[in-house]
Image 1 (cartoon, helix red, strand yellow):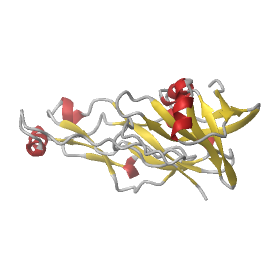
Image 2: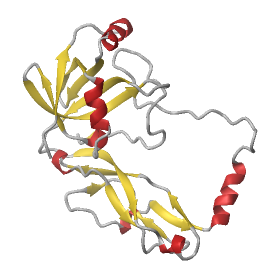
Image 3: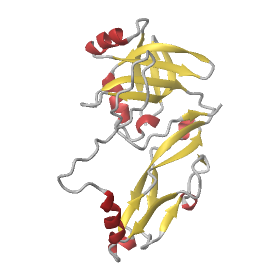
Image 4: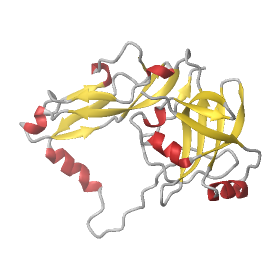
Length: 235
């Protein structure tokens, strides 16, 4: 995998007005921090950060932040999106030590067509879409693939059924259900609570990933409404 380098500029002006001027120049404010290190205010290109978010590993991507010629190995810790158009407004970076574990959330991807769907007409209910794991920064997987081909009607796959690399340490409870196959009727009953056609439903509340360092309220526009579990470094 080619090395990813993102150029960053240090900044001294903070606050809402300074950040607006920075965004008008095509940059976004950010903060670089790490264990036992002072936070550094900086500015980066939203296009480069957006490209990282759209990559296979997404926010778990390990890359170099080039700050004045000094490269820092980081991951994207938090980011803030504009609620309407989804534009990046702010990004926080965490400087990692390659020999220390990180706590991260990794997406789950289902593979195959369950026999309970193909043969019995059931419906897949994808319950848990991320796993919390601990591993070294260089061992963070892009995703965790779960094969559902042999999953029968009314059967489920739990976390303890997964076969993961020895380099990964599970933090999610092993009894948590990842996916199961249910009868269509169960799905219909679950839909009873949904608003009738033409009824006014409550607007969806989308949570932002965090707040900017200068006191700006985080915009309610995170692209993953209910999937965020904050990545925590091992103390």
